[in-house]
Image (cartoon, rainbow, N blue to C red):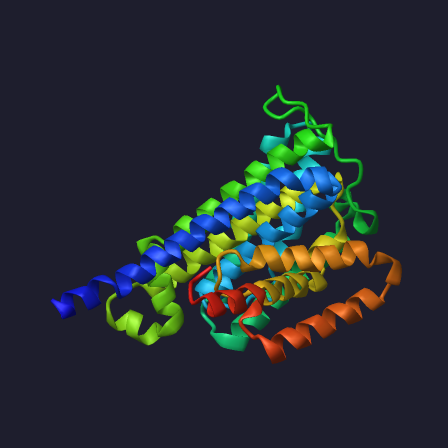
Length: 325
């Protein structure tokens, strides 16, 4: 009787506690999304959501797939360019322009991922960085497509599905929230699916996963493409919000920024990157008057995070609460 009670209140209890904490976290996110546009500038909140989705995409690849990419700006930026170009020069609606950006990001992720997964560790990271630099120089040298150093400006906000007017920031905010929640849901279901469990086993011990008969390369490539697609979704949405796509979106610094967001919030947590993106974008916005010192402050925050709480802000909270977030 004692043994059965121990079994019933062991892993099962931990799983229930984790699910409860996730439901609470989802509820908190939902409440904050409702309240945010009334207490902050809607465009700022939309920027946070776009970069939070970008950080979630990176975290899916690194935190759960175990592959550190230094080139995620390639997917984010190229999707931004494609979305802006198709909306401005082809005259398509926002749903088509965003979809086009996601498809291009997925294709780019398939190509880069197929080559990158042949390497491991720092070599994989360097391969992704090299390809991201190629994308940057392509964007710089093709002004007919990207606008060069000027970027693609004044991207029009046409009615969504030809019916919903999104020229108003609050109307667009609802659309961005829906996109963010859809991306978050896809990531959450991926992590808690059989595919996600295999992915975690590959991260922990790739050799053992191979010995069990799993086609490791296929799993790694699939998560690479999924991560690139969600990063592209974030970039395409960002172009619509700011009506701009620029070289900043494909610069290597953008890849470093998303790494900082994920690590600060908590690598390997579900909601940590959202918190990390909020902190970083908030610092950039509210400390903008300090100029280049914002970068120095971000560096200090990163160093403090690595030295004091390596699991990130949310990882630290989860450890103290003895649950998973």
